[in-house]
Length: 110
Image (tube, rainbow, N blue to C red; front, side, top):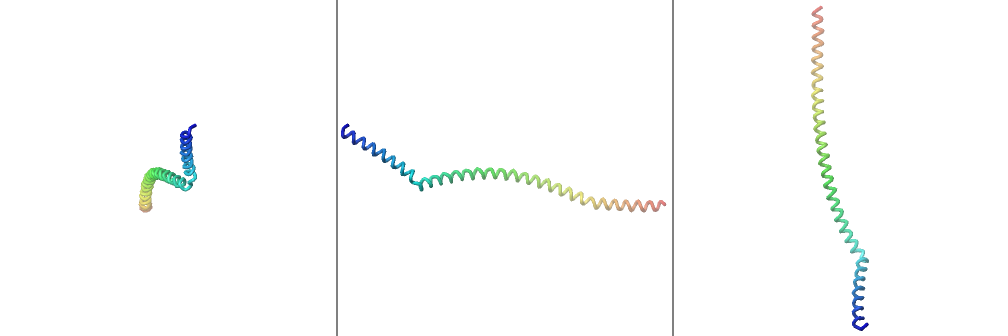
């Protein structure tokens, strides 16, 4: 080997050694790696939050529709029950008047 070949080999070795040191330094930089991981996790969490928000809104809309339907149904039943409750006193009054009329009619007949 000539001196120039040896010098070239030394230069290549230094370059590879420099790259290796940079890689090791990047792995050893825990603070930088933690920041990168935090940014990654934050983006992932925001994506999940958006996804969950969409699902919750969809479920809420479905539940809201069911609640409105049930409320309408219950409201109709309450109105129907109120109408029936109003008829009972009227029916009782009619029955009372009819009973008094029958008694009066029987007494006159005898």
